[in-house]
Length: 357
Image 1: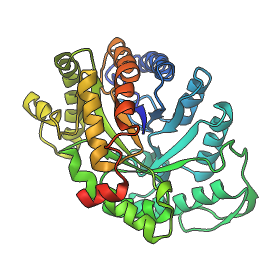
Image 2 (image 1 turned 120 degrees about the horizontal axis):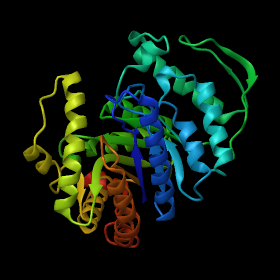
Image 3 (image 1 turned 180 degrees about the vertical axis):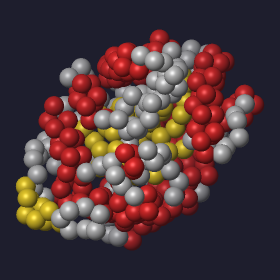
C-alpha cells in the first residue's frame, strides 16, 4: 500500500500582506514535500482551491517546483476541479509535470468541495453534473489518443487536433476523487479509474459500501479487478506522543472545520467531538507513530485500499511540527505499516473485505 500526504496549502487569510504570506507557505510546503521524499513516503498531493485561506490554486505549478527538488515521490493534484477547468490545459500541464518529474505525475480529478471556481471561470452551477461528466470524457480522450475529435454541450468541439506534449507515462494516471456520493463511486468503477474517497467525518468504516459499489461496477463493466485501485484521504497528525499530537492538531483542525461549518450550516466543534473522532473507528488519524500505524492497518482491513493519504497540514499548523510529523510518518509509521501488510494475514482480497463489510 502506498502512503502519502496531501494538503490545500492553508494560509492566514486575515493578513494584509497576502503575497508575503503565500510566499512563506509555498517555501515551507516545498520543504515539506522534499522531506516526504527523503523519508521514503510514496505520494504527495496538492488540492486546488480559489479562496483567500488557501494558497494552492494551480497545483501543477507548485508540483513542478517540487519535482525539481525530489527524486522518487509521486506528485498528484488532490484534487483538480475539472468541472471549471479546461481538460486540454489540465492534460498539458500534468503531461509537462510528468516530463519534468521523469514520470511521477498524476491527476486526481473531482468536482471540488467549494464552488468559487464556477463563477470565477464563467460556469453555471446549473450545469454542475454535465460539466464534470463531459470534461472527464474529454480528458480521457486526450489521455488515450494523440489526435482528438470530440463534441459535447458545455465546451466548443475539437476536430482532429493533436494535443502536446505527451507524457512519459502512458497512460498518465488519473484518479477520480469523491466525497461520499454513491453515483460517483459507480461512475469511477464503470470507467475502470482508480477511486479516492475523502473521509472527513463520522466513523470511517461507514464508507465501506462505497468501495463495494465501486468494485462491483468495475467488474460489471469488464475491468480487471487488479486495476480497480482505491485510496482513502483523511485528516490526522503524528507526533512523538499521542497527547502531544492531539493537543497540537486540535486547534488548527477545529479552526478550519468551524470556518467551513459556518458557511455550510454545521454546528461548532469541540474537544469532546475531536477526541471521539480520533478513537479507534473515528475519522481522525491522530497520535504517536505506533497508534497511527495500527489504525492505518485496521482501515486496510476494512477497505483493502491501495493508497492512504494523510492531511496533516491543515489550518495554522506550525511548520516545525509538520516537519517532525512527516519525519515520524516516513521513518516510524511507514515501516510499521509495510511490515504488517507485507505477507501478513491481513492482506485480504477486496472481495473478501466487501463480503465482511
